[in-house]
Picture: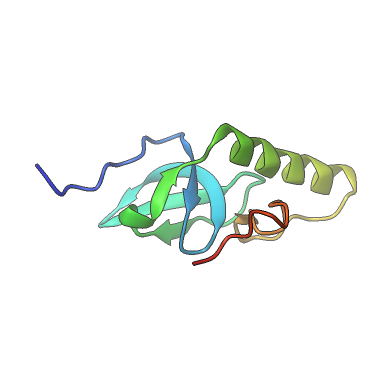
Length: 95
């Protein structure tokens, strides 16, 4: 089974490294991992090789972004919570 991409477990908070989205793993459909934004919303499909478990810091930042959006009565977008806006300038995502 060498070369196999490790799968994240259902219920894990994970990062889609292609979209820089963070969400909860809801399941697997075909070759894709299905993620749902932490604040709720539409699930999206991510390539398994692009999904990794979120670090404790990433989980906290995403959870705080959802809580702040709810407290200000703004509606979080239907897309994934973006890490880009939560990351400090010294750690910009990118390649």
